[in-house]
Length: 289
Image 1: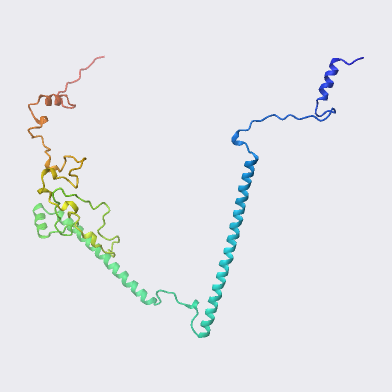
Image 2 (image 1 turned 30 degrees about the vertical axis):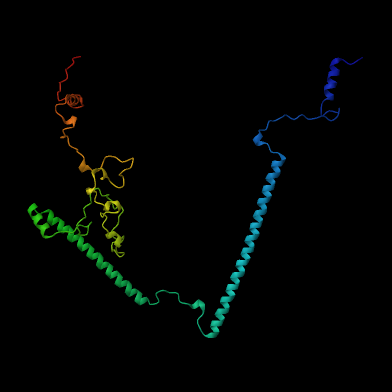
C-alpha cells in the first residue's frame, strides 16, 4: 500500500533535523543587540594592545635606568670608601689622628657649660620673682586706691601722675583738619613675645601713627569750603557732599526743619497714628456666657 500523508510529513520533518541521519544542518543563533559604546572592533582592540605594549616597554626601560643609576651610585660609594681608607692609612703613618677620631662636640668643657646654665637659671628666677613682686604691689595699690574717698583719690593722682602705656608718657598728637586716621590694628604688637622680653622692641613701633602723610600735610582749613574734602576726592564724579560731623546740623532746632516745627499739623497727625502713641486704655468688658 502507498504511504499516507502523515508519514510523508513526518519523514520530511525528520530530514530537516540537524542531528538526524539526513546530513549536517545549520545552527541558528539568536541575534543580540549590542550598543555602539560597547562594541569593540578589531582596530580598537589593536590600539589598546599597542598602548599596553608601549606602557610595558616604558616600565622596563625605567627599571633598566634605575638599575644603571644604582650601579653608578654604588661605584661612587666604593670609591669614596677607598679614598677615606687611603687617607686614614696615610695619617696613621704620619702619626696624626684619624678622621673618625675628630671631636665634634660643641661644648667640650662640661663644667663651664654647667656653670653658665646655673647663672642663666638664677637670672631667670630673679626676674620672675621681680615680676611677681611688682604684680602684688600693683594689686595692693589698686585696693588701697579703691578704698579712698574722691578727695583722697584726686590728691593721690595729683601727687603720683602715671604715664600712659599707649603713648609712653608723651602727649598724644591731635589729628589735623580732615586728616585720615590710621588704626594700628588688632594684632599690633609693641612688646616682645616672651615674658622676659629678651627680644626687645624695634624702632618702628615707636613711631607716631597720628602724623600726617601725603596730602594730609596740607592745611585744609585754609582752603575754600568746596575743596575741604577728605583724601583726593575733590573734583571726582563719585564725591558726596559729606565732609565731617561738625559741619552737619544733627539737631531739630533748625528753622528749615519742617518736622521740628510745632505749627505743622502733619507732624501731630503722624504722631497720633504712630504705634504706641495713644495713652488711652479702656477696660475690657466682661462677657457673661
